Length: 266
Ligand SMILES: NC(=O)c1ccc[n+]([C@@H]2O[C@H](COP(=O)([O-])OP(=O)(O)OC[C@H]3O[C@@H](n4cnc5c(N)ncnc54)[C@H](O)[C@@H]3O)[C@@H](O)[C@H]2O)c1
Image (cartoon, rainbow, N blue to C red; front, top):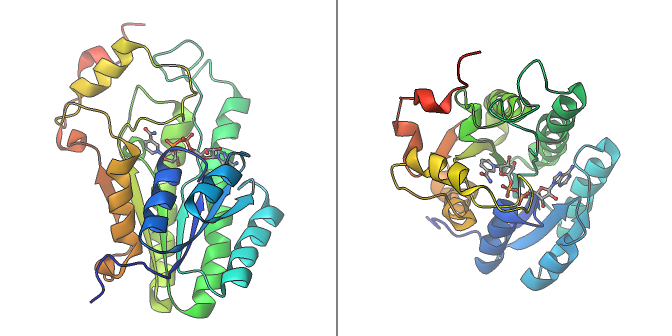
């Protein structure tokens, strides 16, 4: 068996201009895959050039753009073997921060996050499934989050809810697509150092609080996620579908939420 080899495979990565998506694209390119990098942000062109891949500027919330993206990849490369559906946002205060409590949160902020993290994923999954069903093969890997697997007071409502919904979407799609030889799995990272909350440095107290909940005592780096992504893309995971695969430095092994992490008395 050609275990982790994805040489020559046609790979699409959404949210590929930075963070986890960029690292996944870099890893796949280094393994000899044909990589298509899609992102709403312009730096995707530079990223693709650096990796020898193809750039696609695409907003995953735009149904026509997503269809054109997937048709463009499959048309130019002849097929679509692997889709990393990774684009996502947060940038909304948590219930512990001003404006993030359930009765303070704006409907606009709620909708903004759900639109990218859930609607955008649905559109991408739908189009990739269409192509992969027809070719009767493929691996779809979605970036969920450990924040979708439990309540998480340090993360915003719409983010937690969007990622919980992503888990349901991945499981449901895996059932339907299994008989077509298409696998659907999710990555569930814990906190990873990226720009998702904005490029401003995080307050040291917040960083330390997260570290205290991670047995490995450090935040993840994008490279900590890319190996798992490669496994799920490759034939080494040929009997794995519908799974939610955690990479979080051991945080999920802890069942206790510290009361100091919860909002104080009202
Ligand atoms: N960083 C973490 O702690 C963490 C933890 C768990 C899961 N995740 C998930 O990992 C994924 C990648 O996030 P990241 O942490 O690398 O953040 P990031 O901000 O570095 O990367 C996200 C990318 O998605 C792109 N994007 C945003 N909206 C888009 C849209 N409408 N269409 C196309 N592209 C869009 C952004 O331009 C950006 O390049 C997200 O789904 C995120 O929810 C992140």
